[in-house]
Image (tube, rainbow, N blue to C red; front, side, top):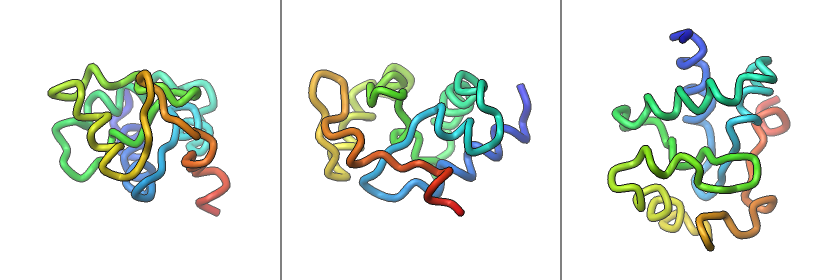
Length: 108
């Protein structure tokens, strides 16, 4: 795994605004690594020990909390998002398009 890629992922994730979410794929596209969404997921799995990485704000492309099992406890991903005003229903973000943050269009 590429440590520089992980560092770049973390830099993008730090920029996700409070109350917004993005996807693994959106981050990989922004970084010019279109087919590396899974690698972004690996970076997020490694980020849980880093307190300055808001990994809870990264979800899959449908708004599903696919990384929740990597939080301790696994309900903390949902709790953190709800504390930011994001509504979760059946493990999925309601109004996903409304709270979605796309780094490719937001970080010009």
